[in-house]
Length: 162
Image 1 (cartoon, helix red, strand yellow):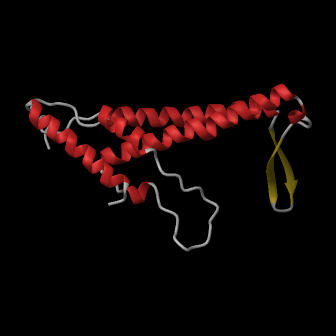
Image 2 (tube, one colour):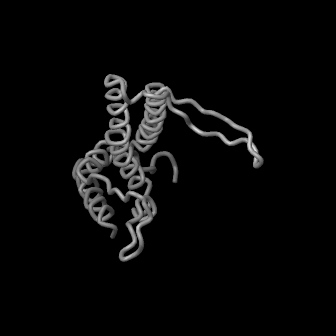
Image 3 (cartoon, helix red, strand yellow):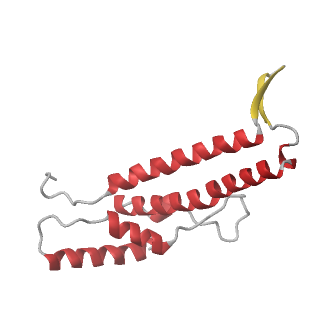
């Protein structure tokens, strides 16, 4: 496919957003460790070096530090994680990846594995696909509107796993 016929979309921006959200989660996790006074401790055993995480004793008794830790943790595990999940769904859809490959459904009647099977928010994913999806590339307005409408219909079916 040559440069003129390639569909134009903003997948690269979603890829950058995913990497930024991953970096944000790492930064927040570091801040959580600093808040709790956590540090790695290594000890020699017969099997080799064993490394474990130790927290400063009594860190949770300081209400200000504990509140700060809880706010950081909640922001990382709720806000950033949900935004990353929705962004990943939009990115996978625009790349043509099957939904089952990106977000596996929990096994029906199977035993619980302890994993959290969270599904992306369809409305937020649709907004991202509208914003970062197909861009006009020379065709007339009617053709472009029809292509965008078809893209939204494909997204609904994709999110339902069809």
